[in-house]
Length: 225
Image 1 (cartoon, rainbow, N blue to C red):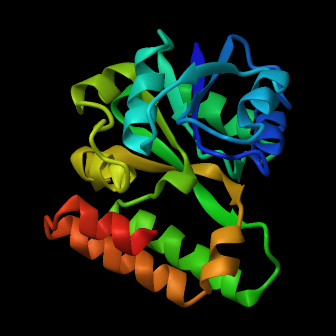
Image 2 (image 1 turned 120 degrees about the horizontal axis):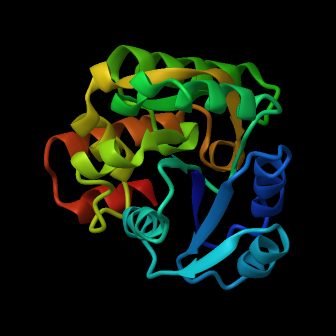
């Protein structure tokens, strides 16, 4: 069984399209869980209409992802952001990965693209894909596919991390246990359009540096937001 786990918070602008892409293929047995952190908009209604099971949670991506994993008995877990759309061929790539028994010892991530035609978007995506491959640090907007046993062995997502929960788990996995999948997801560029194609990546790098240096969580959260 494959479970897709999506944390949400006021994600009405993207969640319907994200779920439509998930359900575009008949992948039996497939379970889709939306773990909502207290949305004030139509996120929960759109998620239910889109075929997902809703789980209520306190806000915080680490907490929401950990709760979603705890709520399913699926052998394979695919963690996906609410503004990240799977490609048409996702079922083929994921099925090829999870049907190889050797991959139970690895986690996988998608290559990244943005829903924006600019060269700046292509530049940021290229750098993100390089970072994931060279440093073994895929971010959450690239998704994470992992076997339940490996997820549990690594200790799963830390519920006390509102941010950088993806980096934290990737570091525990290590580059040797991470593989790129054979296809590319498309993530919303809204945060980069609002924050700037130079300023937003720089802020992300600074947040990463603070996290890796062990700075107080409030520093990282304040800078990110």
